[in-house]
Amino acid sequence: MPLHILAPMVVVGLIIAWGAMRFAGCSQDLRFTTVEDARLHWLRHRPGAKPRDIIVAADGRAALVEVGSGLWLLRSFGIDSVIHHLGAAQVITVKQGLTLTFPEYDDPKARLTLTPKECTIWQARINAHQQETRND
Amino acid sequence: MTDMLIYPKVTDYAVPFFILLILVEIAWITFKKRGGRYETRDAMTSLFMGVGSVVSGILLGFIAWNCFTFLWWLTPINLGASVLVVVICFVLDDLRYYWVHRFGHRVRWVWASHVNHHSSQHYNLTTALRQTWTGTFTLMMVVRAPLILLGFHPAMVLFVGGVNLIYQFWIHTEAIDKMPRWFEAVMNTPSHHRVHHGRNPRYLDANYAGVFIIWDKMFGTFVPEVQDEKVDYGLIHNIGTFNPIRVAFHEWVAIWRDWRQPGLTWKDRWNYAVKPPGWRHDGKGGSTELLKRRHVARNPETAGTPGFEDYKA
Ligand SMILES: [Zn+2]
Ligand SMILES: [Zn+2]
Image (tube, rainbow over all chains, first blue to last red; front, side, top):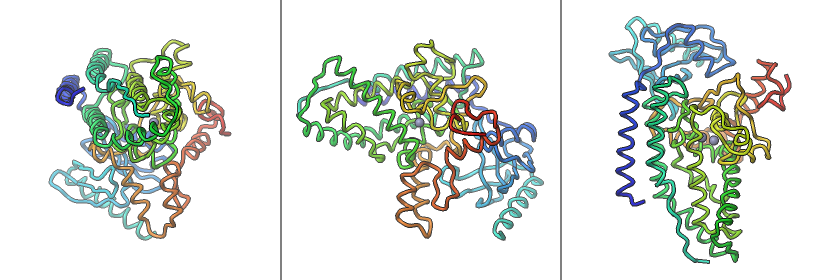
């Protein structure tokens, strides 16, 4: 098929598909409603690693999860979730909360919306964890 | 031999049907409130991966094509282009697909390309189009060489490969539960391929088939979808980006970073490329076998059931 037909067809197709999904309400974010909810999401990623402690952010889009292997971030990713170990995270304070950057190419950054009080707690937890792993 | 044989680019002509069926699936899920899930950014990423894959084919396709024309010039055999020959070519090419796909999961160098097809936590028709941009670099075109040397024209080999990919489009859906029994026995189906996309220990490294599921049954990699274990889609380590560039290249970057670790031997570097994904030179890596073993240890009642046939509690 000539490119001058294929290319516009693809572009139009992409726009229609995007519109259909917006219209069908497919653009919501996952929220962890409770600690238990966050725990279930965590266990989906790491079935063997029982959390010792979980704190869920007030906006429900992120949680700090402590397990045997250290401190992890569980965050909403579309209507799914992803996890990331916080050992090598760089923490930057921004107006709406914290921005975490990671060395991994497949998950380079997480923007967290946190209250000022949460910011202090989360930052302290992450720092303490990183200190601990350095001392090991 | 250098005679001309021209087939239509079937994947191009399938594009409008792909779009139409995606819209039908979105509508079905929205109105029926079952049969799958769609998320805008995830689905758009999958579609962009599909577009990028076509572009990569236009830019790099000549490499494989030149190899194939060389082999065709080399071989003294020409099987012609009768319908029977095309059918045989299709079946043999599907066997070729099975092995390329199996390498795609068991050899990290090939996985680096194929991983992006599995990088979504969703399973819908857009997931089918989440295709690699870096297939040429895996050098897996060599697995097609025997077909051409046996006398199947390169254009025919690419044509049946295209039909194979089109077949696999419709099986990427949760809207269809099971097909008729005879069909499930012979053909790859939504149910069989859902298993292939699962990250549950039970479903790891199973159902590599393209069109005919019989290859998995022949080579011992078949696992049926188990009624009481819903498939959890995605990767063992799910990625946290919707950026198509990162989706396309993340495992290549990971290989590069593994190679650059201090204190490696060249044998370690070789192993980082050819061992199954998860392998590490310090022995601390994971593997499918380890995940299955741990699962059976936690859930002894699963020992001996589908996907855990070789594991004892
Ligand atoms: Zn696969
Ligand atoms: Zn697939």
